[in-house]
Figure 1 (spheres, rainbow, N blue to C red):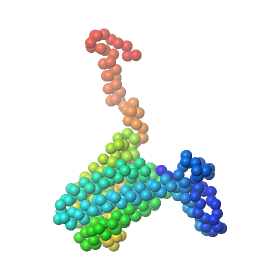
Figure 2 (figure 1 turned 90 degrees about the vertical axis):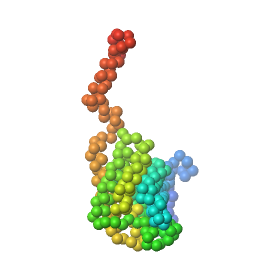
Figure 3 (figure 1 turned 180 degrees about the vertical axis):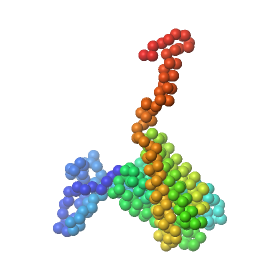
Figure 4 (figure 1 turned 135 degrees about the horizontal axis):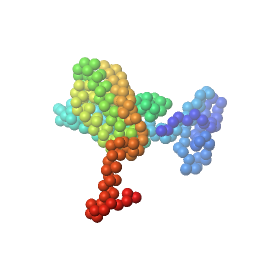
Amino acid sequence: MAEISETNLNLSKSKEEAVVLNIKEAGEVRNEKDHNTPAPALTINKKGTSFSISVPFLQKLIAELLGTYFMVFTGCASIVVNVMKGGQVTPVGTSLVFGLVVMVMIYSVGHISGAHFNPAVSIAFATCGRFSWKQVPAYAAAQLLGSILASVTLKLLFGGEETHFFGSAPTGSNMQSFVLEFIISFYLMFVISGVATDNRAIGELAGLAIGATIVLDVVFAGLISGSSMNPARSLGPAIVWNRYNSIWVYLIAPTCGMICGAWAYNLIRFTDKPLREITRSGSFVKSLKTVGSVRSIYNPKKKTQESPL
């Protein structure tokens, strides 16, 4: 992942302010015309302080912003349309929309930013050492901005009637929704950790598995807690509509659930080695190999023994 640079070559524009565009590789300044150099880093110095961010990292943030935007826009649009059309979309249809849009965006930008689209996912990965803590605030800001922009777009399109609110709100007690959000967030992060971070899993199916998990979660929890599983998804509409009732449920429960889900998978991961290396020492697999070797030594057609070599 791209990281914020600490070493910069600054060309002073004045004693107090300077904006410098540098291209660096391994601490060396290279010619801007060299197309083989890494992407440039933008460095801003003001009154003795400096801030530098690489272009690849900006690209990751834009990918997170767009991914979160389309996830919130598409999923929440299905909620509003369902209300406006008298339930024709149905809760199952809404769950399919959320699952499919997440799956599509994972395959679209997952190779660029990791396709978090969720501050709780970024935090959970960081607690496990699989994501830089330095990048968590920037990722969370991009995700929240994407959610806010999507919420503004939907409010402009469908109006601001009270019945068109597409944010997260419990239909029962806060504690009931808190527990549900914790469990489904735990479940989602457990699946994400299994299919997206373990090299023994089939990585090509990660988007499909994660999308299917979201469909399952929304089907049984959507009518009770709203099945947010995402602080940005809940906070964006709350800011646009200025409705913060029970918002703490959707900030704390998904974050705690995601962290616990990530660590739960780490407990059973026990190694990052490929499956073929792990099974070399397995007694059951060894026994199967032994049986296979014995069968290959004896050829039933020739009724004679052959050398295993």
